[in-house]
Length: 343
Picture 1 (cartoon, rainbow, N blue to C red):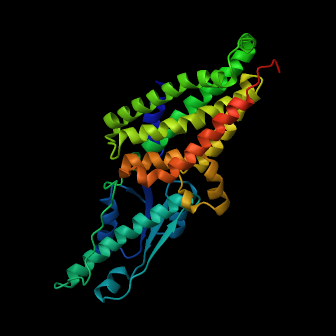
Picture 2 (picture 1 turned 45 degrees about the vertical axis):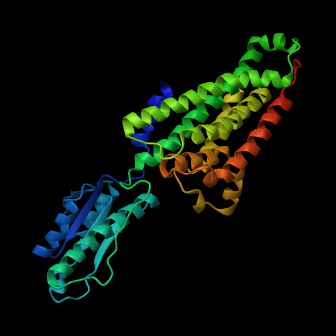
Picture 3 (picture 1 turned 60 degrees about the vertical axis):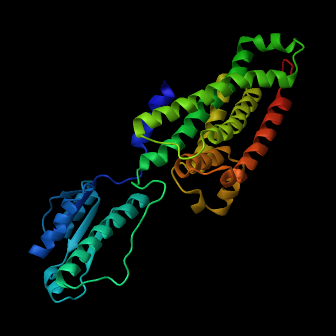
């Protein structure tokens, strides 16, 4: 149940949407037109207007005290210039400690100002007919629901963490209890031992993925646009990589503390590089090369492509090829790494 609880919490909490922007407005014009512009922000569900005196310094104090995220300054000739059809300038000051949040605030604010500008233009020009009409359609996620984007990624993380940690702890636990010595004296071959350790957790991880998709459907209304067998086929190969990685770590560690430290090191590295929160295309060249050996990167990409875009095998054949090679290499490494000796 713990992974499901994590899915429900993270899908609602891990978001880059700006849902509550505290905006301090310094209105030097204090005219009907400037108040209409302010009302456009008041009516937006993303903004909360912070009361402030008609002073930029007073508004800056609100930003310093973290009571405001941005300041909109309206000059005293705002309405006059609009009546005269002259260019009007607004000043937007944004707390840019978080660059991503600052960009979103700038985008949201510019959109509202542009909408108000268009409204003013239509009112002033009765026969206003734009020469070019544009219509925007958002494919695959038409409502721009960030949860639908995050849930497939979070599922990848949860399946990987549970599967990898369970396998990583398994052999180390046998070492600490001394039962590994009893297994070593049996005629069982190395590949049989590794496969026997891998299959139970492979089944558990696939079941966890299926259960997570069911919860995502019931709670977040996330429908799988693509082929479910294709998704589970890729997940089956991916889990061979993740579980084999856990087995490799367990053969290298002497106790559970060591294997947990090693697992956390690789997991955090792979998760942050996988594109869960940031676009991998915007990463530097060396990071994109590193992702060639990052299995989470492939599953993160394929999971979103199949679930949200409905991609077929031809669309993900490259990822299929890379993950198959990684599965072969890590599984072979896990078998060769295991030694039937007391050392």
